[in-house]
Length: 317
Image 1 (cartoon, rainbow, N blue to C red):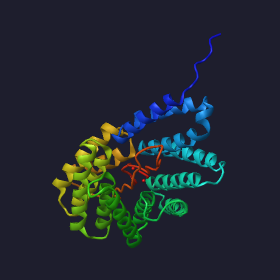
Image 2: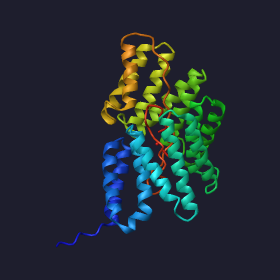
Image 3: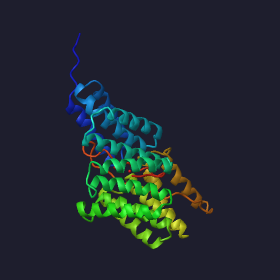
Image 4: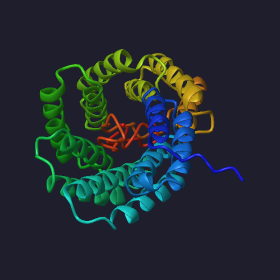
């Protein structure tokens, strides 16, 4: 009988890197496939099982959220949470638990269960502050994620404070031109729209869109999020023709990247139909996207980019 070839860490690492590259360019279906393959390898590898599985479950949870598979995402997050709690209490464990609560908050935000999302996000921020500096990038990501949720709860003043604190950190660490900054500007635009500051909202959304296009290209679903926000802003201002241009572009991108049946694609598509029929547009929640980490091995916190109540980290939240 032939002896099975041993599973190697390098093979799993290659799959994860491919998944992360796919996720970064908005190809979440490819990312899910590669992560599932990596997880299969982890099940048969003693080396990967202890450390690798929770991180893979966390990353799969984020990808499934982007794909609108919310129940599946929750199962992955909770599996990772149960597993991580078995480890000895260390700074690394507390940091990872903060990631998971951050992402659970992002998932509930995507479901528009804002009160539940707030509980998770505050728990994540509390854990993070116990193991990271208050002005760190990780804390900034948690603040941005919490801010998006507070905006959904109409707690606009506290939301804006967290956004601006996160923005200061990102600008100090990254300079003026970075994807994380674009995500914050997008969300500040949504907040300003909600509080009647339409000129400021337009400025933030246009700035975010230009920066996202530079960083992600024209066909990334995160670009569609800001196009949707601009479209909804122009709907509110009575500029239906301009709104239709942005919303049509947004729905085309979402169909190509997330699929026609994704809740985000369908939500934006319905608004396009409303405008095309020249009926009065109903109130629609503005999309917000919290912040994102760059790699599974560093900060698996990309509470992410779904249009329907999206938080884009860590958690792109």
